[in-house]
Length: 119
Image 1 (cartoon, rainbow, N blue to C red):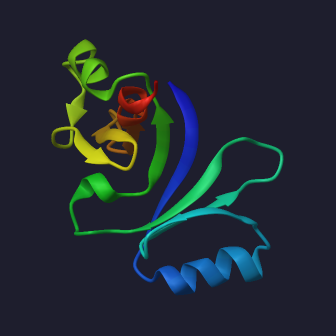
Image 2: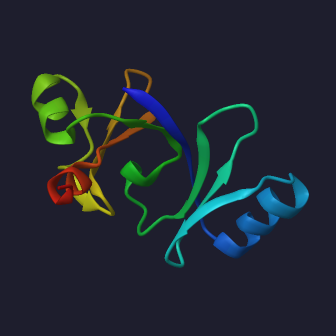
């Protein structure tokens, strides 16, 4: 597992974008459609990812986002974790979330789709 993003769910992306960019002075790293934007965090390779929640499900709660080699294999290797649903497709791969013993949401993702299309 490699910490890649700090995932921050937001209700109003334009307001959040203005706050993190204009008030805090963070540099935008990338965008995905109209619902997600990421910022560089100085001194680290970890990025802050802002994302509009698609619904009120707990799996969209803010928390760390770790890269793993294969989400589905990770889930099979950790059957005692409290998973918040099945793995789902996301740009470039798969993702899912779980809760730790204190109820904090943790997210994982892989880039399996990119591996499938590589020569």
